[in-house]
Length: 99
Ligand SMILES: [Zn+2]
Image 1 (cartoon, protein in one colour):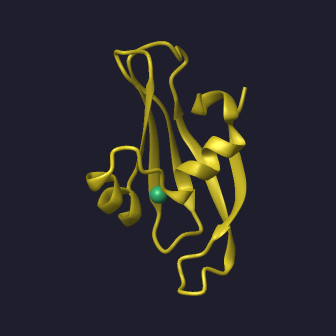
Image 2 (cartoon, protein in one colour):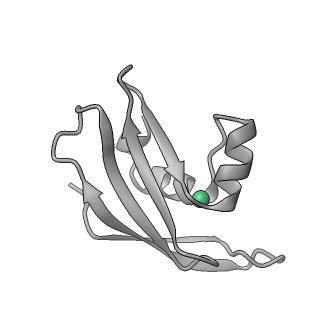
C-alpha cells in the first residue's frame, strides 16, 4: 500500500536540466484497482507549474497514464506511447502499477 508523498530527483525545468526535487502527492486512490476508470491521481510539486498525473484503468484491463505537463500533452499527441519524466518517476517508484 502506497500513500502520501513520493519524492524523486528529476531533471529540472531550466535549460541545464539541473536535478530538482519533485514531490508526488497522492490526491485520489480508487479502493478497487480492477474497476474501469480512474485508479489514482497525483499532484506533482516542484516543477515550473503544478501538474496532475492520473492513472486510468482501461476496459481492456491495461492502464493508461495521463499528465497535464506540456511535454506529455505535446509529445503525447504525436506519440501515444510517449511517457513524460513525471510519469516515468512514478512508474519507477511504483513498479507494480506500471505493469
Ligand atoms: Zn509530465
